[in-house]
Image (cartoon, rainbow, N blue to C red):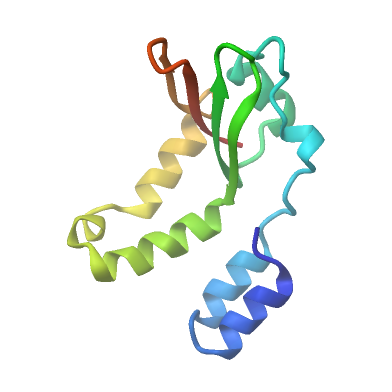
Length: 136
């Protein structure tokens, strides 16, 4: 998670523009760990969980969850503000020409129009992992 101080330091060092800093600062605060934790015993349907947390608002976060199927416990939990994802895509476009073809506005529209925020849901029985990528 990027704090206000870190964002302002990036701005002061010329690593981001004032517009990018304003956008990052306008992102909602990261949800507390208890709010985003996936239950150990039973995984709720992400569609229902997202709708309950989101309340119909525009998505602000990208989440990645990797859960161990045997124990039911989370192995990886990553929460990234969508503003930071957009910023990363801009920076990445300088190094990877493939990213230049992506239209952030089109991606954002698709995420806003989704009934659920679930983007990827993969269950690897052989590897014993359940991977979910979603926005809220």
